[in-house]
Amino acid sequence: MPQAYDVVIIGSGPGGYVAAIRSAQLGFKTAIVEREHLGGICLNWGCIPTKALLRSSEIWHLLHRLDEFGFSAKDVKFDLDKIVKRSRAVAQRLSNGVKGLMKKHKIDVIDGQGALAGAGRVHVTKDGKTVAELAAKHIVLATGARARDLPTIKADGKLIWSYREAMVPPKMPKSLLVIGSGAIGIEFASFYRTLGAEVTVVEVLPRVLPVEDEEISKMARRAFEKQGMKILTSTTVTKIAPGGPGAIVTVESAGKSEQIAVEQVILAVGITGNVEHVGLDTVPAIKVEKSHVVVNEWLETGAKGIYAIGDLVGPPWLAHKAMHEGVLCMERIAGVKGLHPMSVSNIPGCTYCQPQVASVGLTEAAAKEKGHTVNVGRFPFVGNGKAIALGEDQGLIKTVFDAKTGELLGAHMIGAEVTELIQGYTIAKTMETTEAELMHTIFPHPTLSEMMHESVLDAFKRTLHI
Image (cartoon, rainbow, N blue to C red; front, side, top):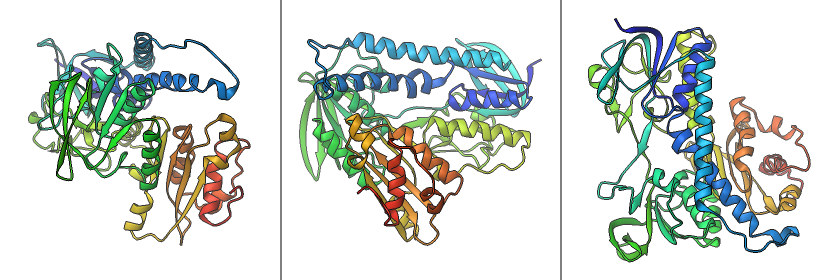
């Protein structure tokens, strides 16, 4: 007989393990199936270890500005092996933390590859052998996604790295080319450039960080180029061949081709959902489109009692979105009153490059396309006392409001610590705050957050410090 549970979750990434915790809190007997490491890609090979790497590069950047702050040091060096080892140790610590949370909430953790075996059943295998048969009224698919290859260019782990190899380099490449300028590509470009590599970024779209507000995207490009990055937009990589210091990359733009010689290539062109080997063929009612499981606003698939969350169900591919979906899914199952479907416009996005970029809601262009008459506010870091004191006076806070209702439609930032600041606007959007509440909110001084207030004031021609 199969082991019986109220809820079985396949995959222990941010969406899966948070769903398991909320399930247990709601009184459900819960099991989670994981084939590799608790915490999934985010904790082990994504969000967390990359931030550890970027922290090291931030320190290296600061060490090269010591004179500006009244310090001096000689023969400052970095040890790449130690930087990587610290990143891996941080990931391991977080994975162990998830293990502790599973134990605390009495969630059964089953080591193996979970797959649907028809409605209400999960078959678990390890090394080709059956390790468990599970039965549950509710099954949640949280199998995540993996790096996407291009039709003619595939990561081989040697000449062409995916994010995994880029996170554990055996040595610092003198030169590298990054294909893709989304958050993952730009974060790696920033890390390697800060530590001294010659970096070229190739983007098929007209601008870097293409999902961001165009004004912020342009500022980011200027900052990256000032750091010495070579940025090629509206450009396609047509061929990668061994040669030169490592690879000869052929790129094409406006009908013209050129070859770039680099030691290493990083492929960062998005992700594809892990829909294979999950037993979807045993439940025909579950639909898959473009490698992602189709769900409704409550994360329900076409099959009763089977749900899907996180990267598996499509963009935005963000850990915090997956976590929210995990909680929403469990509370829907439990019949919690007063629930609302997730609003994508209230999900913040963060890129931890140098300088940082963060945003929530509609860009200025998107707001206008939706028919809004907008009031746009801007406040530069150079006008903020805390930013100047920190030595971080380059950046911008931009806010977009509906001119008729005062609704906050979107907020967009570039500069120091904006990945922390953005949550203020996210709360404001979630609470459906208008410009009136924001303008009458008292922000502490001196802080970077004051710029958020000033940007709101600027949208209504009331700014104080510029």
